[in-house]
Image (cartoon, rainbow, N blue to C red; front, side, top):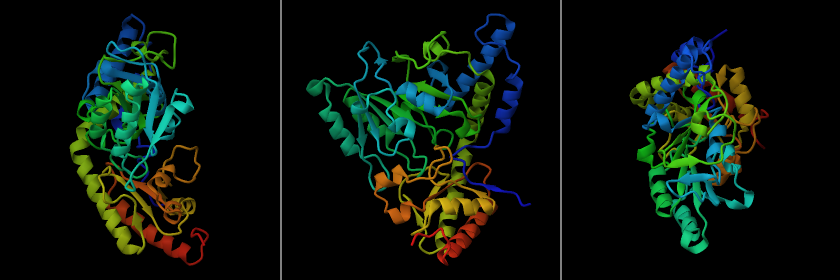
Length: 393
């Protein structure tokens, strides 16, 4: 049996050797809240990992709150109970873009009627003019509302990188707070909290080669406080998230963050070169192949390919049978393949959106993996175009 080709790194990155070793070493750790030697040793593992995660995004360890993953971190952040400096009045309105992860589009702990959806351009970039106009309409002096804005750094389906720094200027000028979902961008492109202007940032362990079930909410500074934690009880995580810390998972997250930071400068350009080669070869091998959002800044590892009339679910299954792992859009819906809200928001025609296949590379992806995919893509479209069930009539 030939080796499989894994091209679904945006769904999850394989566990890094450094993370595996750190987790195994931490499995017998004590309770990090205990004051004895075993507890202090466990606490050291947690704090070392906190410092590593902080360095990945250019902040201080004291600003990192560990969670069970990106979804919990998003929900923790998206609450009216946010305080900034001496302003403890909280937030009254949540603004999110139409291409956000489902955990953000759901609105966190805001009431449905307190959530506004911002449009995006046909290239999948948040419409900054629409953001500015909505912020102006919600200005404190006009309505008394105090906005929280949540925008992803890079889209998980298209890879499109958002103009976060420009958005931050607009949000802060309007007296708002900006949350950035950096789950897909961290470890792939520079992701500095201060440079982006983010007040809160979400990270996930398994997207950078750490274990599943651990993530973090990063605060810009001690000026930002979550006054309404999701999990209440003990005083863990600076009072923002109660419960005994998952020491092994956190240690693995920290090791993965350290490795991702170390490899960032070389891995990004290498993946971008392979991605560009894959797209060029796929277009040449299969006329009619479309690369969604090819003309704008994207993550270096992400391609969203489609062909007129192709059915994504059939394509993913066929490629899986050929030994290649890819996704139909985002892999966050319990294995379901449905219409992409991201592509709908971009106005992509149904004939193209319905066949979109996400190919995401990683640091260990090689030229052979790319050529294997291109050959399989060519055979797939040819076979289905001859009357197979994967091309819509």
